[in-house]
Image (cartoon, each protein chain N blue to C red):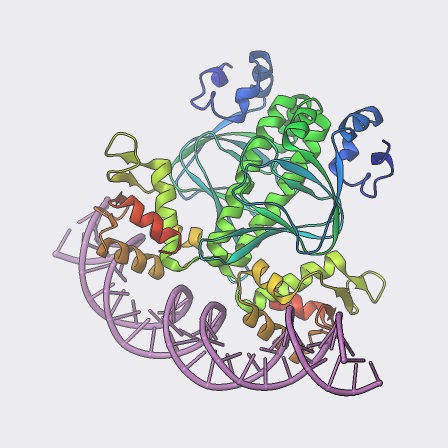
Length: 233
Length: 233
DNA sequence: CGGATCATTGACTGGTGTCAACTTAGGTGG
DNA sequence: CCACCTAAGTTGACACCAGTCAATGATCCG
């Protein structure tokens, strides 16, 4: 199968490090999989059996504390790697926020190929380091920031990931995007309740920093002010 | 220099992956460095110039939000790797909690050696994956847990890292250890204030779950109850 | 003994969580 | 096409946990 050669994320996923024949080797183990919105791919507390790449769609990694409250640990976009390679159990669930397509491997297959391909491991290392940076940045948010600051930070991050600048460089002018998140999802990312998220969005809209034409559409009207707000006015 | 061969963390640090001659190669670039308690080794927002291994002592990684509040992102113990390899800036400061000894490399030197030694990168990858797991676990704490739950979780983690079991297997019987942390340090790890930490410790002591013979010594008297408390009674 | 630092305790405030009512949007079927 | 139903979001009232500010207490060291 030459599915890999024409893969939408061929250039950006970790597979990019592989030569054509190595890619061929890996592709034999891979399996394309469609995931419906809301469906969970891997479960917390389960032996980590699957790893893979996101080809299309958005997924969340999450963990739940005993009282049933979920905390989102990360968001996976196309070309991101998901799962926990190298022999330990997974501490997170992976759930699709939108309909999605992923390319999965059993952990054992992937581990074996990775061990034989330093380039692949190097890519994975870089990605993991970036994930770690991001997780730690989020720790500052969860540990120190107030509700408005969290929401503002979240909207800015979403804007820079998903946003179309109305202007040229994206630095100024309204930025508009459609969230793949419901309010509950946002709450789980930010460690807040759905009500608090809603109130802060209302507040930011009232101050004219953002607009919300529909529930899931967001327009950032005043990026600088929103940034100031995100850093503690 | 054969310093590496007799290094205290030879068997447990990432260098363990290197053969004797490769170790010799790396050791030429390495530099042993003593760090005083309170001293900062690397700074947030600074181009990441140094990486290294902790040989002795305990250090913290931290980041500060604009309002001057610090959040601790991780704790580094002997044989842990610190710093951000592979060409990006560092988003964290590294500060010694106790007098410490580290073995440092310039990022450039380390990167070059790593590229030539897949085994080293593999070790580093495993370590980074473990750090990521730990950071995400901490995100649940910061996002979802109450003050008592945070303090209980912290004490349990410290107990399992630093603790001497009074009994045989460590599962029951009092666990005693000396914290390398002051109250302010604990507060920064848990995303709380020093007063709240103090109150929760007092509360746990009042309930007989722990004891604090001195400010920095902790005895876990009832491990099971403390675990229940850490998970939301 | 006195000073400095760190930890504890108290009184008060305020931001979020909680619970409940209400509104809006979207989809289905008559 | 409209009526209705359901799910999602918003808003309000209130309680409570943790932050803030300030005073007191303990410990260490000169």
